[in-house]
Image (cartoon, rainbow, N blue to C red; front, side):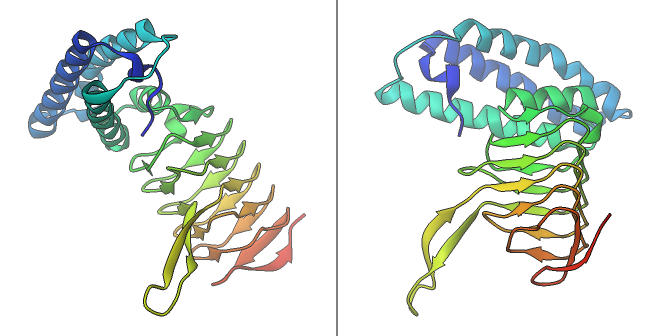
Length: 239
């Protein structure tokens, strides 16, 4: 889980952050229970995130890592904040402006317009880049806690796509899921990943490619090709 400036906070600042997260969570739960206009009411959470942002900015640039109990407190508090931000950003009722702001505050490199990232995006870490003009549809899962995922400019990611950076070596019979292996995933400029497709660790989908819905991509895709199947194979060239 990302630490950043959080690593150097004192006890008073941590207590204030904890209080702000409490307020945000309570407000969000209240809105979920009673809101007639979720998007409009969710925007009322923005002042809380203004305060969180100001607190983060004021601590930037400090030196010296937290230690002992303080380090554990930092980890617990920031992990809780990060998980809450992820849940709120993914919610249907969250307006696009707040969604983009939340993802950026989580450490994601979001260069596209916020309305081009639909609800339901689930990320396991901050190492995600979404390029200019890219589109991410509903319920996309990005497994990026260790290795990065890059979605290039104007690329489109369809419904329920899985971008996965973690796997295992094949172990012995008694434990086939062997040692952990992590490798980045890159989706090239202008590529289109169809609904329900899976892109496995270490894969680069070349610029201008189309990956058909439901395909499983385990090897690099050369640019400007249509790939389909399980495992995905190049079906034809695209002009």
